[in-house]
Image 1: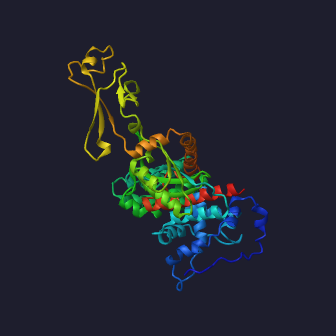
Image 2: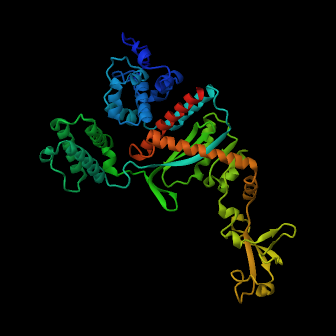
Image 3: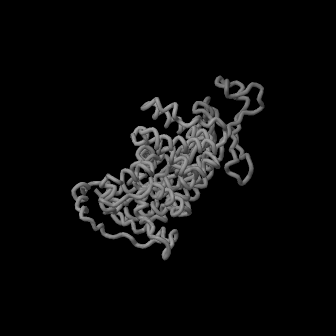
Length: 483
């Protein structure tokens, strides 16, 4: 049963918070800045309203997940720290002497309460609304980019994952007490996943009950990781290593296995929209969704800044129709074609003809290709072949015995012609300089909030991880802008 359980902390020790949690503590600042009652409204349908025992306060459960995103800790370690870290207890709305939750409650909260929720858009919308309320969001430009996250299990089989984590745990235990080797459970030697899980459970039980070193921090971390892998992800392990992860490409010779997060961010470095997809998805195809999500969050979008991936023709048409400037360079194949610079002919605008490197002008031109399909059409310029036969620069230009010499250029669409002119302006070049900001934000997500590797299996798990990480970095940015 859920009910409004937010009450004043009545404890003879509550005054301790004023002593040990200073005014400039980040968690205190977040508590004072954000009204977390929106959690009740959005989760109300996930609870029984008039039956059963009282549920753990959903705001407290949500804050536990937020702490995980900020401090990059496992369920077990975040709950353990909340026993003695007074800033955690203050943030969670607990009295200093209050007991903490069981870590398994966080798993149930994720699976039962947050399932089928559009948590990503909801949390981003909350932070954008907060920024507007604080009058710190002035920009009408968004910077777009995609960052990749590797799958938690890569392309290993479920059994290989368990074997790897059990091996690391044994290695740490042996480094502390080699005599336990003879007492360890017998390793599983077959290829049956259920037998491997059973072996890992025996290994955990032995270390916790008989080794005497289970509470040593060096042992505790790999032990907790193996336990969480079995308890949290046993269903996923029985299905596949990660059924939703896909191979994506960062460059022509660099690939990854996992997911992509497509981001839109203001020039104040506040994320206004995100779309999380599997790793193979094209960046440019997400632009329309990023613009519309940013607008739905309350931002007025007049300019979009991105790399070449976002300058495809459909995006040029969409932004023009919606009176949005698209500061994204066209692919060089469109602007200069496939020829090398030294092989290009010069265009004489007065004559409307191309001139070859030897100074000879084309004698006529013709339009070729499928009519009505501008991407397929070319304009071909014909040169006097008799002059070409005698030209001193004919090597590599004119093929001996050929009956004609032509030079063809692709006819660019109106959208491409306009974009080519736009990207030559000083305004375009100045706006392009802002794009570095989103690279720094991607780095913050990965190195400050563990976003380089997925914390669970599946696209839904990735979306939850993205929602909490982006909510955390947005709150930190708002605090900095307010200060």
